[in-house]
Image (tube, rainbow, N blue to C red; front, side):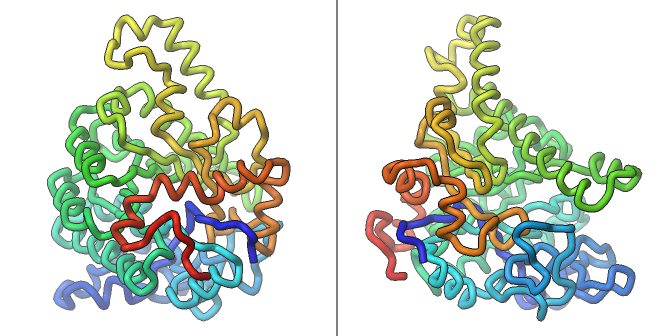
Length: 401
């Protein structure tokens, strides 16, 4: 049990097999996302129609009988009964949170917010949107059963701006902490992040008090996966290489965001780079500031006022981390406000020690109490205060754990 109040700002909800089959019209048949056994891979897979997507339980690693917090070989549970129920069942999740000492967790999807391609390319836009709405409603069932324990993140059909705005309007007061979307829309056939096309989206989020999350691996990694199929690097070496590749893709996204003018146009809108760490950020901010000044951006882009990219970052962008040791250098260059704690539960990259307390010591061992309180609770409570208030919870009062 942790002695600190903790908001885990990146956990994943492993979608149960009946999430969509129980909620969408039976007339759509196998076009609805469903799970079935695959003889070739010897595991349960998600299928969209006849197309296999990914292992249904592959990433429900924490608590799996073969899980090793020190070594991950890329495998995971093949069947549901092998997975930890806390990955997909709300009662089991809360029991796990209570035992470990998590007061709240931010919920990100496992399937619904990353495999955009089947939704974007589906010939029936109504069916695609129904899947995303059903997932959002499923999250609300968790919130309604345990108010104040979860901060859900809304998935949106970003490729359909009108439908996206309608979904935000539908759920604006439901207690969501923000939206989760891609930070690289140009990789999905859409205008780039800095396009004014997206201004109605930023405006809707700002007015609703919703943050915008760019979760790592939300871009198009088909070229990476194709290279992996042809590469002689395999197994753990391949996984070790691909992780930083995806983290650094988010560094590029943050650079795009800081130079886009979005933060100047929407000065209260908050963005989060999720599951990408913090170590790269000091270099990126220093590089942006130096080039910003060297290239005379103040003169050519007066909308930035007298603020450097690092100033916008410190005001409106947050990062979460889970394995790096927080150093004074990070605090000096990033400031304390943007830094959030996460575990990535139940994915294999997180939880490097058996207990929450040990994980806290791993990453915050050098830091005094006031820094620990800010990183573990205060920064996230401030970021998601409106979501908690909409759930009827005062973020400044403790939830009974």
